[in-house]
Image (cartoon, rainbow, N blue to C red; front, side):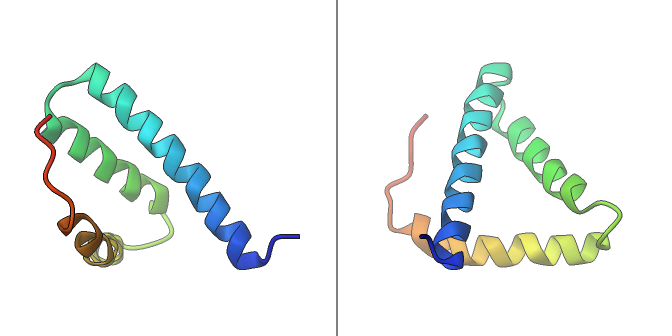
Length: 80
């Protein structure tokens, strides 16, 4: 039986997989990275709409970016 932490991680991995599938579909819809970036940020704001103020959502996004940045800093940038 999975522990709550294991179950949470598995749920996260399922959501991450869906997000990457969505990204692939978005790339097919628009080659402009800025369009995709803005659309993904809008989705985050819509996720919290009505339950958190915009400034709090911004802080949440910035906190996640600070956590992710070191992980991706170690990898060579993609050229596509």
